[in-house]
Length: 120
Image (tube, rainbow, N blue to C red):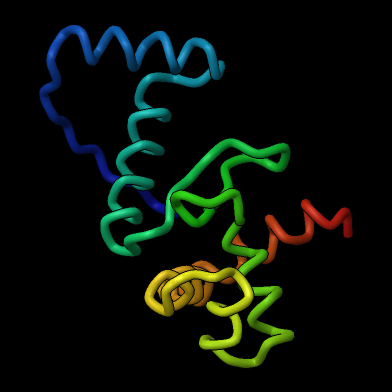
């Protein structure tokens, strides 16, 4: 996907923190900054969805729970309703809807994570 260059100013101590984290991950600071910015924007767009490292790379998951978005999709496929999926997890409907909306918007990424996790 084509990219554009944007810049921003951050405080020196945050720049040092970002540099340490980028070094630990063997990434350029600009690459890590872009990743963090993208993920934070998505967290704002899809409240209840966060991101974490997993064996297969970065993974979307349900904040406050250890459940990946791909797992919510799997339960929803079997349950065939948002209400039954929410009941399965004992979550509010809004949390399930948010995870499913994210999964719909980023279907290929969620499916890729599912494939990696189930070993397919």
